[in-house]
Amino acid sequence: MAYKPTMDDIKKLRTMTGAGLGDVKKSLVEAEGDFDKAKDLLRERGLAIAAKRSDRETSNGCLLVKKVDGFAAMVAVKCETDFVANGQDFIAMVQEILDQAVENRCKTLDEVKTLKLANGDDAVTAVQQRSVSRARRWRSMATTSSRVTTSMSMTT
Image (cartoon, rainbow, N blue to C red; front, side, top):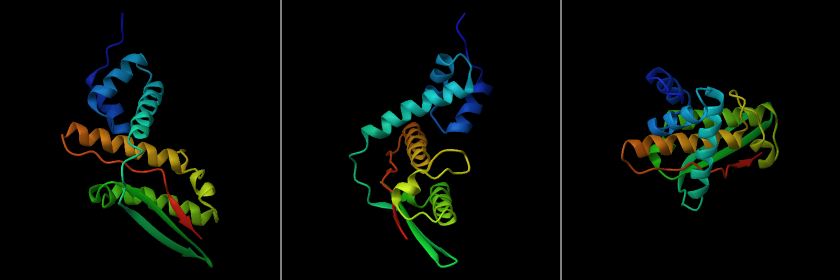
């Protein structure tokens, strides 16, 4: 008999990932109730969606600067709309990347991209996942979707 996810399971995975209802249900069915496998399926699908949107213009974003003990860094992450750029979760993500960059005294963008954040993901994966979860939420609300780029910039 095929696995049929409960509303509680769907709600739990949606809360964890920010993905749309249909995508969550489909992933849970494919993963036969395994939340980790379902999250991986959602991530793979989301990265494919982000790749399709990679040619869109990103003229908004968040730029943060920090100086500690004579070391300063600047991190910028771009996005398509001011709605995303002004969002608290987007700003918090950029702040976390900046904090890690300063703490680890990163001197290149490649070093920043490989930083491990609090959730265990590297900075690039965190940005890509933010892109996917936002786009899905907006699509489900029938508004214009936006994409966060993986093109971070960093200056020391």
